[in-house]
Amino acid sequence: MPVASKPKHSGPMPRACDSCHRKKIHCDRRLPKCDWCLHHDLSCTFHRIHTDMRKKRSKPISQKQLKRHNLSNGRGPVASCAGRMEMDLDSLGKFALPWQYSRPQKSEIINHISNGDAKLPNRSTMEKYARAWCSSIHFLVFPMISLDFFQRTLDLVYGSRDIKDYTASASAKAALYAFLSIITIIEFTKDDAPHGPSCEFYVAKAQSYLVDIIQESTIDGLQTLTIVILGTSFSGDYKKAATFVSMAPRIAYALGGHKNPFEPHHGEALVYNTSRPECHVRNLFWLCYTFDKELALRTGQPPSINDDNCDLTMPPGYIELQNSNICCPDVVIDNTTVPLYPWDPRLSVIKSRTYKLLYSESAIRKSKSEILQHIRELDDNLEQWRLSLSREFRPTLTFSEDTLFPSALLATQPIMLRLAYHHCVIIIHSASNRCRESSQDLICFVLCLSVYMMFQSRLLIDILDLGMQEIGVASSLGLSVEAARSSLLYLQAALPKIARECFWIILFYVVSSIVTILGHMISNPNDSKYASDFKLLIQVSDMVQSFPITELSAAELIQMQLVKDFSRELASMHY
Image 1 (tube, rainbow, N blue to C red):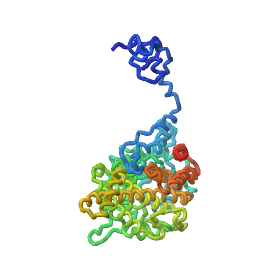
Image 2 (image 1 turned 90 degrees about the horizontal axis):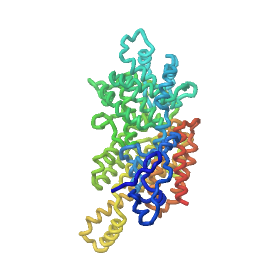
Image 3 (image 1 turned 120 degrees about the vertical axis):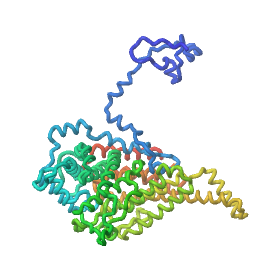
Image 4 (image 1 turned 135 degrees about the vertical axis):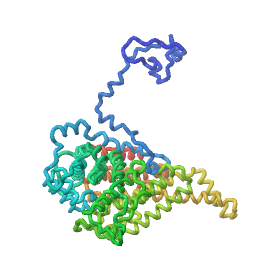
């Protein structure tokens, strides 16, 4: 087929003649006239000026970054939170991607290092930071260092006459940089907080020792990777956190962290004490485990730790000490104080089973009856965990504006436990979306149920069983939506008391609840709570705006603006 000759002007050949371009129709570019111009007796010309698309690249890079929504991979549990919308992590990417591109670039970090900013503080300063951390309430939740082992780390880095073997000094240096990264985020003390480079800078410096960490496989190396997981998670960089959480368990396995160190040996059980290497390694293992399972639910990617290969026995007296320490800010902390750990490792075990039974690749191929059975099992496990908690901070099944709770429950750890509980309810029961039938099938079931009630026909029992499944699905979805409502309402009440470093952790709960409620509103526009749900979603903008942050980073500003814009979009949809 002959094609029109290229017009005599610079730039690429236009794909359509002037007439077809104005009509926005396909042009075959035949000679002497294209099909459209031939049948309409028009002049077939290529006189318009072709704009060079490369000029668009001169726009600020931030504008381009804000529009990149499709970099996330995988099919996460949030995918089922939006009902028939089938919204997965890709569609949620706009809430999680901009921060990845607003971070310091590699060249910036290299400039910092070349300018001498990479120098560690003097030893006395590092010791002061360590003592302040180990005596704070944050140490109960994040037992990432041990004072006894930290002294040995300092000896390896700063030198000591008692330390002759410096083969593991690279991992030791990385551990100090990692420690500095986390204490720049978490405000454990106002007086001793370090000033200077950012968390990203210290993480990058610790990451530069990655090859040495893998080769040495020491406690310092495991400590480095574990702290970096915490720092990147609190900075919202879940992609990097998931990468590090895939490496840390290998060193934990090599050091025996997956085994229970409190098993009696020769008739004598080990007493918890962080000065013992077994206890410190076990603490690091639990930190890796809890974040591994949390990141699996947030990213949709499989967890790195296989529960079947681990002894998940809690430390002796964990439950009793949790009940007494979780709401006590004045608890005396020493080497024998059993930690609380992030969220609750027992809840993390339920998260692990939730991913395996409902959201893994094998779970996708399960039948509807199997999915519903797993939902019931996991719901029972979650309820048993809830009832095991003390009444003082036990999450209620639901939360409303009229719910009263003691001021002691406004500590960060009880707040995070309640939010994690509601999120688990959402994740577990949202899986029933895969078991939903069409509206025609539901009408058929109602008719069959009526016939069965009238004639007691045995021929309809099988159909009736399928219909009962549909009722179970509706009930399960209702629980997930109610949990989402409770999560947002509770956040409105507890937000002023949440620690600043929890911004990224909390923001995910907000977005997950929004998607769940929005999916329910779209699927059930005639629901009696439609108006109140819509009002609650609109209030999200003000709620996020009131987050107790003294100084917002550029990444946090972007995320807050995204949620606010989303709330305004909801308002425009309503009106």
